[in-house]
Length: 126
Image (cartoon, rainbow, N blue to C red; front, side, top):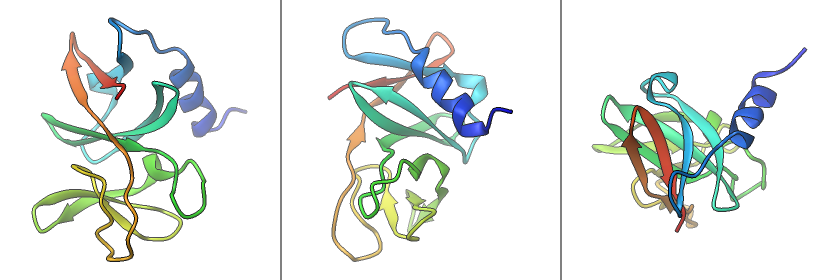
């Protein structure tokens, strides 16, 4: 029996590059508002979130405290009007715009550009 993470990893491995520097993550309709998924882009594991109908963000999927690939499973929310994700392991929150730690404990996570094209979500390599 396949787990959800195994299915996500299979999806990650099926990405195509439409042009140099961009990786197709998923169909737009497959990512619902408030949810995330993971993908490999530019050699890194990236967590991609749909904040609203037309707002998407991508950050590193690796928890900076444990090294576990879990941020795509984090709780997506709002902190004073800024989109955030909270790590499911340590409950530290990160700004999805620039990656800084909102919990006041230092540290920052990497971010990637996201675009929507031809009904799909794409992540750019930096």
